[in-house]
Length: 142
Picture (tube, helix red, strand yellow):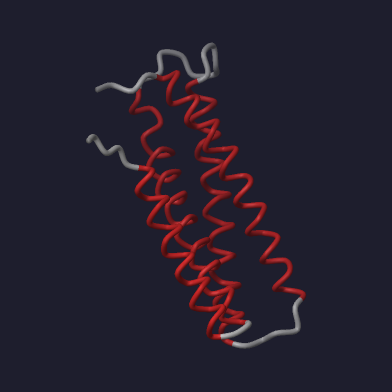
């Protein structure tokens, strides 16, 4: 099955929207942790995962912008074929997946700053969230 350029354009624009929102959320967490007085290992791990998430989602935004510009009818590239945006496609989808993974790591670790009970809860929520996201990203025929 060949995916049309119009479909890639719509997919890229939707991914830009989602990644922009998620990167903004991650950047907000990074900013809050940077001004925080906490300097323990757990807070540093949360800061690292939030930074990785923000960076990955920003890369995804710009990779998808490239796809959006290439696949827009009447755009700056004429006679577009799917291989013209192979690299932005690979980079965009890879960084999107890494961003999702690191965002759920951040969610999972966040509760451990409060207590063991809250930490167990947020870890379970993070794992279930990641699994459900990945399940909804694949097509299952019944």
